[in-house]
Image 1 (tube, helix red, strand yellow):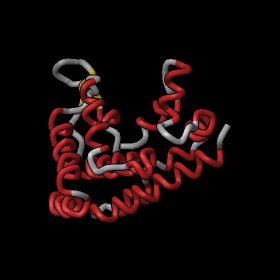
Image 2 (spheres, one colour):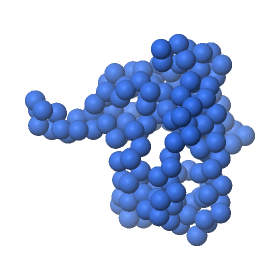
Image 3 (cartoon, helix red, strand yellow):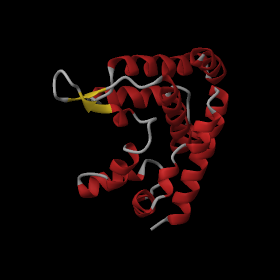
Length: 174
């Protein structure tokens, strides 16, 4: 069990997301970001499965076949596209819903911060885009418009850097 290391990782991640959210013009979302990670349902598995190089949810999923912490987390945090899956009234099937812009921006900030935390000194501005592409190859259930917008922002980050991307995001938000 690694409660101190997990607490440190979660805190560093939240602080980095806050800095990114401030740059993006959504400071309140940055302050409130991922508070559910401090609940026992998420914190205890995070401490049990902490490795420092990837999400503890992945290790919990490998061991149990699912992650209770992730199921709890995605159901409470609107910056995850998995939150935005609902029954389509026409098809009567679960389908992705387009994310509102403010949560899309927070998701961008979250992904960049997570890449920085887990990659450390090896981080490159292309890492969040690479991670996104790998997820899309596995068939992640994200609304096509949300995926297109996120891909655009991540590609801009990879090609033009943070300053240009956050400038664009602040304009996009308005």
